[in-house]
Image (cartoon, rainbow, N blue to C red):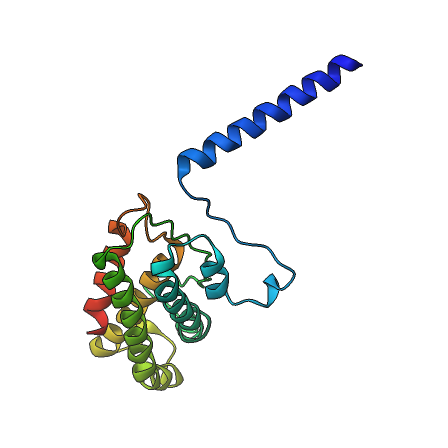
Length: 198
């Protein structure tokens, strides 16, 4: 009986040692601080509560605020409208704002500029979608069959489909993998987004 306690104690000690080594080697821990009010926080506030470099906290909060607003309002409405159209060339995916990690170990000028540019581009994307929504509503009211649309109308729908796909990709991706630079995947998605809404 005493042997079981000794073995249990050894296992706990080994687990604790392993966790300590993991956290020592990783340099930072990306966790949410739990509190009784956690459910009342926006996603952006939850993200900023994670361990993030102090220099990046404010701009990441602004980025997350815009990403959350765009996804939960404009993109949601866009995806629902596109979902009403029959015979679309691609399938519509409803996007959710994922909890993103920002484990940057440095906050140089290039990274801060990129995050600010991405926030501005999300705002520009929201304006672009809203400016063209009337044309989309009018089109769907007249006919909800993609095959009956003119080439110009098909181009509008294809732009909306691309925007939806890119915003979903951004929501599903991490901004950094190596903790030093914005990932190429993220850069490509935002560059493609810029080409559509410019």
